[in-house]
Length: 446
Image (tube, rainbow, N blue to C red):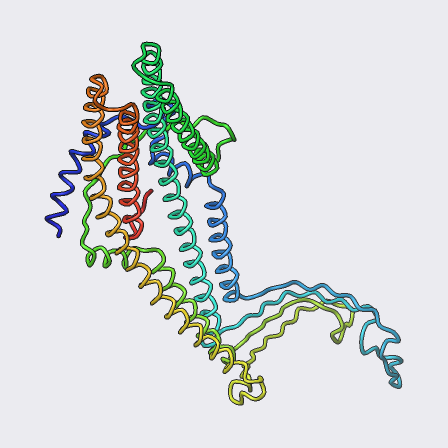
């Protein structure tokens, strides 16, 4: 199959070269002309959807930082003043009133506290945050991919529509020349008014078709301006051609590449990783923890001079062992329920990955099939154009000789225009089919 396709591609290289050569389909190559690569780069650099996805990554990365903050101790400074009354005191014979505390109590201290060890409970929360960052990066890649290929399709749609309008203008010009010739024949008595009317109908039909093409072209330009961030009505000057690049068309090898490269597969894997991280967090909610605290400061109220400020400290260690981790009833079976929920999400994510794999395989098969079809249509449309050109040349000779009718000549001219339009559409389908296959395989267009 591969050898057959290589042979076809060599034929197509000649066909496309003869069809489009190296001419640009647009308004010409100028200083401000946009190539397809440049258009894609501009869209990916300026489109608001990209910035939105980037900010989402920034938000999830900040979430990792928030989770990491639990690894650090907390500290604080406390300043206090207390006025008490009556002042506690007692009388002792020979000594008078003895104060047990000052009336004005001052206290200032600095303290630190933190968790020394919690059996990786905090680390599992951090790991969960990291998987969310990966998911956000996957979303960015998907946005880039969607925008890139939408830009490519819109770009080539404009090129083919501009070329189609030129073909349509040629047809209208030929029909108008034929109309003038037919009117002269009527004056000479060799044609009838019916021939003039028939030709005018064909001219009107060709002009209506041109109007439809122009409307489609303007809509495509509006879509491209929106992607590029251009102001409404801004000129669109594209430089490009319907070139052909040989590609491998072995379904098995392309599928293997797609399963390695497609962002959707990676996103599905990241969803599984997130679900597993959630399960780990659920399993650790009742892990024991060892906490320590230390406070140092100055205060009054110490004997023998109650009003003198003296340094003091306090140190504490605390081991917390939630009873709910041993007897689930006291926690309302919270951990069990959370683990069941996370387990279900893991299975759902795994099933989703299987679905994604099937879709990727189907995309590759469809891309290869479409490209095969595009190759065949290119060959047939090229032959159809050659046949239509020969038929029109022969019809003109016979019309001059009076052996065919005006309607026969009009049919031949219309057939040639339609054949040329069909060939342009086939070229467009081939180029877009190639890009769609690259997208299906997971190749980046930027």
